[in-house]
Structures are given as structure tokens and as C-alpha cells.
Amino acid sequence: MPNLMRLEIIKFKLGSYIKGAVIANFVILGLMVLITFISKIEGSTDFENHQEVLLFIDSIVRGTFIIFAATLIAKLIIGEFKSKTITTLFMYPISRKKLIAAKLAIIILFTFCSIVISNLFVTSFFYFINERYHLLPNALTVSTITQHVPLVVMNAIAASGMSLIPLYFGMKKYSTSTTIISSILIVMLVSSNNSGFSLNDIIVIPLSLAVIGISVAYFAVRNIEKVDLRS
Image 1 (cartoon, helix red, strand yellow):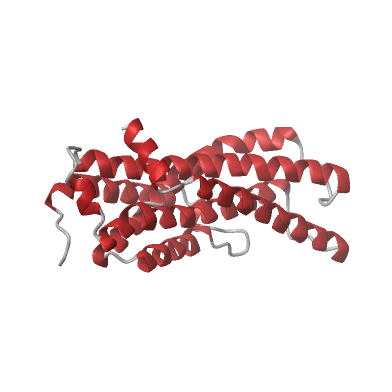
Image 2 (cartoon, one colour):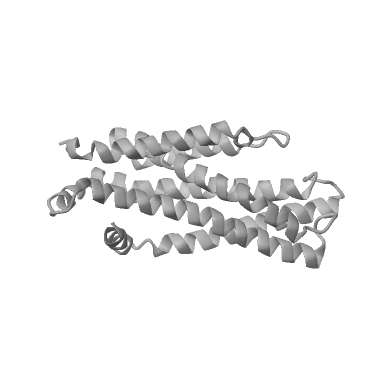
């Protein structure tokens, strides 16, 4: 499995996705600084407390990398079925299940690691920027950030699972656009914020979506031996 994953990463040049993730981090950081800077100038308060700031960062990060995951699904799986290049791989003496499982493992690991590392990166840099320029009324403490870590990890696990749901829609007609659009709809559903309330706050919703995503992946692997490309 690790060798298959490594070959897939080399084959699709997935290093570019890491560069994209870094760029996304700086964009998210810039957005946070801009929002809090404008709030400071106008004398308004967009965030009631520091916990809301951390939740907002986590929400943006999760939404960003759920969509990233959809682009990976479109590239690694849907695109190969659509172009029928997957048939060449199926001719090799390699288990179809292991091949698809390796692709899905890359997507899950990339999503989980990206969400956790990006939260750490954006939050840390925002902490130091706030310490210097006092964008928030009160100091953002290390203790507050540390207490937020378990929630970030739990949300990252749930997001990694639900990021697989677009695979179901994409495989219907081997459509990359449907794959990405469905991920955007999932983000809009889970990460939308209404007066400080998000559906992600109801723990059963992200966990249920994660279970659905894992189930989609399971059935995709289990049934891969029966899949034939459409003519």
C-alpha cells in the first residue's frame, strides 16, 4: 500500500497540491488579518470572544480542504475513469481494491494533515500578528489555543470522512465538475455560519456525514472488481 501511494503521488505530481495548500494558508491568514483590522478601525466587534476567532479559522480551513479533497478525487479517480486510463492500471498484476484504496488513503491523509497543519499555521501566525498589532481587544492566549486543539483534531477527522462523499456523485457519470460542485454544497451546508451558529456545532451532523463518506469509500473499494468502463 505505501508503495502504491508513493507511485500515485509521483504519477500525478501531487507536490503541486502542497504548494496550493501553502498559498491557501496565506490567503486565509490574510483574510483573518483584514477582517480584524477593519473591525479595529471601525470600532466594531465581529467576534464576541477568542473562541469565535479560532472556530472561524477552523471553519474556513475545513471548507477549503474539503474542496481540495474533491479536486484530488476528480484527478486521482474520476479523471482516470472518464479518460479510461484506469483500464491500463487494471491490466497490471495489482489488486483493483488495493489500487483504489491507495488513492483514497492519499486523499484522506492529505485532507486530515492539511486541516490540522493549516489550523496550526494560521492560528500561530495570527497569534503573533495580534501580539504585535493588537487587532483583538484582548490578547489571544496560548492556553486558549491549546484548549482548542482537540476540537481541531476531531473536526479534521470528521472532515476527512465527509470529504469522500463527492466520490459517490462523481462516479455516477464520471463527472469531475459534479465531484467539485457537490463538495462546495457540502461546505455550504456544514460550514455556513448564521449569527455564530453552524451545523457543524451539532456534533451528530459532521460525524454522520463522516460515516456516510467512509461508507462511500468502502463500497467503492468493495465493488471495484465489478466495475467496467462504459463504452
